[in-house]
Each structure stands twice: as C-alpha cells, then as structure tokens.
Length: 147
Image (cartoon, rainbow, N blue to C red; front, side):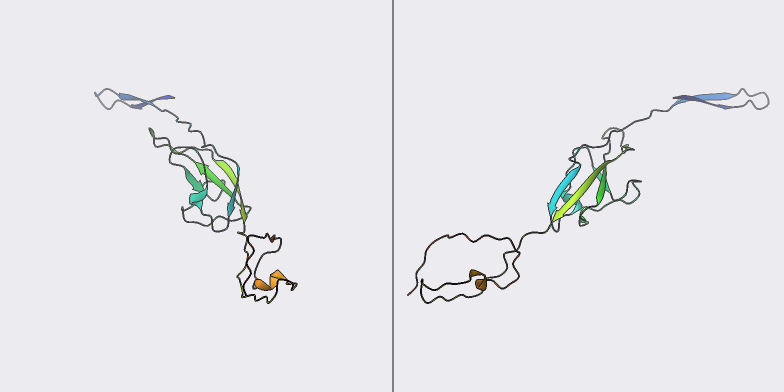
C-alpha cells in the first residue's frame, strides 16, 4: 500500500510531500504435530514446532507468553508463533497444540523377601512396598537358589 503525506503550503513556501510504502509481512505460523504426548514434569521447552524463533503462548489471543521452564498441563492448548529472521515480524496467526500428560509408571520399592524352599508358594507382591502401579507383569529373569 502506498500513502502520500502532504504538508500544505505556508505563505510563499510550497507544500511538501513524501510517499510512504507500507509493506505487510504476513508471516505463517510454525508447523507441528497438533497433539503432543509427554510424561509428567514436561515443560514448554519440550514442545516441538518447526519454525524460526518459535514463541509459545498460553492463550489464543497471544497475550500470555510462556517461559521455557513452565510445566505443561494435561489437556491444555498451547499456541506457537514464529518470528521472521529478515523482518523480525511475528506471525499474526498461531498454531494450536493440545498436550496430553501421562504419569510415569511406578514399580514401587523392593522390600526384603526370604523364601526357605523353592517348594514354598510365595505372593511376589509381598516383595514390593505397595506403592507400585497396578497392571505390572512378573517375568522370570533368572533362577537363583540360595542355601
């Protein structure tokens, strides 16, 4: 868009004009997988987007910027823009990314288990402290007989 600015003549002095060209740099939003999965304690720094100087925001209006150390929240949307390297203009539109956070599975802690005979039936869960997550699977690794 080209604009003309004119200052009117004063007395015997002629008017003065200058032409200004306005260039609109329409920067595209970065690209990314719109659904990203993480384990607990993931932060903004863990989000993945492809672009130049990607900026993350907590809101679609792009008014609340995120710090790289902010912890991600399960089910929340995060918004990414990018900054053009030549013009230093930020994209006016953002890419929305939905975050899913999974809790890291826990096997609990081992407690001592003494078995006097390999003929003794043993509840292996007594070898765990009770803080383990359900759904684990027992697999025989090696046979060890202590006498």
